[in-house]
Length: 215
Picture 1 (cartoon, one colour):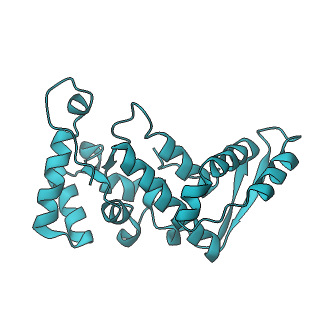
Picture 2: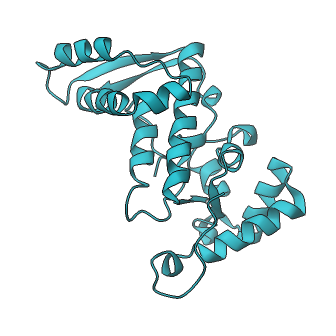
């Protein structure tokens, strides 16, 4: 999830990934939108549906205190006025959203808030470096979300998505993370335990095992 970010605002993709870590979602996969460095996109425009914008406004109103704590400005009167302007429009109508430097900085702060919520939920983020690079379009290792996942104290389970197709192994994936984050052997030890304890059968209680460490 989170690997498909086209056709919607960056804020909405963050919201959808964060919502997916609610009750019952033990191990969301990829979650690129949650932690990818927004500078990767550069200044650009994209479309967002009216329905998604309404949901985003509702979210911001509900979570205004937490967002503000992370430096995201939330102006309830202005947002309610915007909702009133959007009310006559069909949900499938599209809006053009422009992203410049300040707005990308705000996106980064929104990610920070979302990661706080994910960490509090105890969800484990599955990271598949080769898949992210070849399918997710993250060509610059410095922009990969694993940097910020680890910095935020999220529990990360490194995995090898489609290893036969990509010619990679789990050891290769862990090596990539350790190399590009500068974690070395200490990080390797830190990653191996959660990966094993975060198997689906362990997280769902089908087999006994310790609960994943949440930071």
